[in-house]
Image (cartoon, rainbow, N blue to C red):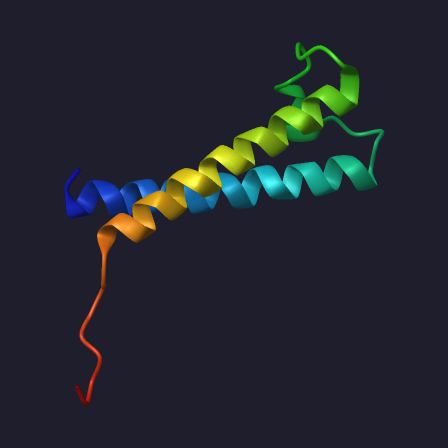
Length: 81
């Protein structure tokens, strides 16, 4: 994968992790609301199943973003060396 593709994968992974993580925390604190506007209403298991799915999505996004970050290598030159 090229440098631009790795940068895009890293950015998308960070954004999805942040959004899914916030949805999980919001779902835990306010159990009367629907996580992410009811997108996952068809998931079996009720609220617990929806939160598990959101947590899994956040985990996959975090792993893929981290993988892209490590594959990119050093991003710049450190001054003084």
